[in-house]
Length: 362
Image 1 (cartoon, rainbow, N blue to C red):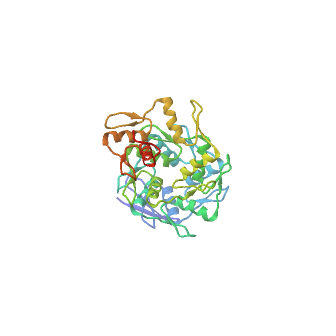
Image 2: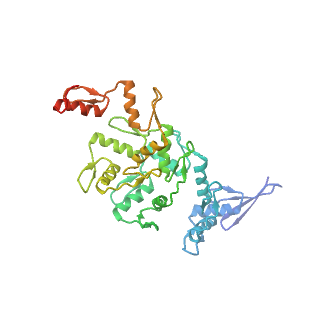
Image 3: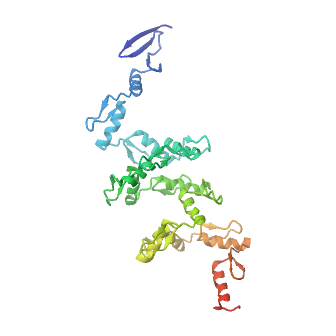
C-alpha cells in the first residue's frame, strides 16, 4: 500500500492509493487521524483554542459551527428538539436526550466505587466527591469550599447580595437560573420528574432522589455521634440537634426557638391563624401539610402503615409505633418519681397526677 502526502494550511493529508480505501486526514500536532477533513478542522480548533465562528447578535465565538447554531437558539427562542413522550421542547439535542431518561428511568452512568447509577454524567461526577471528600470550588471571599459549582454560585450571593434572575410572575429573584427554573414550577404546578417504580411525580429532581430512597431503603447520611443513618442531608442536620440541643430558629413574636425551620414556620401560624392547606373534599383547613395528609385518610380510608407482626394497619405512623409496643412490651415512658414505665406518654401524664395528689389510685 502506498501513500501520497500533501501539506495544505498546516494540515497533513495522507492519501491511501489502494482502490476502495478512504482518505485519511492526520493532525500534525497530535497525529490523530480523521476520515473527514471537516472533523480535522474542528479538532484543530479545539486544540489551538481558535474560535472562528461568531454570533452576529452578541459576538460570542465558538470552535464549532454546530455550537454556534445551537447558541443562536437562545436569541431566537427556537426549540427544535421535541420529546415524543410528553411533548416538551428543547434548544439542544443533548438536553432532550437527558430529559428522556426521566421517562425511561435509564441511568447509564455508574459509580465504580459504590455501584450507584445516574442519568447525567455531571451527577456522577458530583456524586464521586462524596467518596473522595473533594471540594474543588472555593469562595474567593471567605475561603469556604464546595463540591458543586452551583453551590458555590449560590453561596457567593450571600456576599454580593446579587440575585440576577427574577421571576416574571411574582418578582422573587434568585442567584442562579436553575433556582429560578425550579421556582417557576411553584406557579405552573409542573412536575417533570417521575418515579419509575410507583409513578409519583415531583417538581425537583432532588425530591425524586429522596423519594426513591423510600423504595430502596437507602440511608446514605450517617450520624458520627450515635451512628444512626438518615435518608437526606437535611434529616441528618436536624437529627444532630437532638445531641447538641441546638435550636437556631427563633420566633420573632414570642421568642420560642426550634431545631427545625419547618417547625418555626408551623409555629408562626399559631400567631397568625394562617391555615394554608385545604382539604378539597370537605374544605377543612390546616396549618401543616402533614396534618392535611393525615386528615384526608378519613375520607379515603387509607391506612398505609402496617404492622409486620399481626398485619393490622393504621392511618398514622405514630399509631403503628404505639401498637407495636403491645407486641414487644416496650415501655419507653418512665416516671421520674417512682420509676414506673408506660407504653404511652398520655398514660404517664395521668399516672403522675397520683404523685401530685390530683388523682387517687383506682
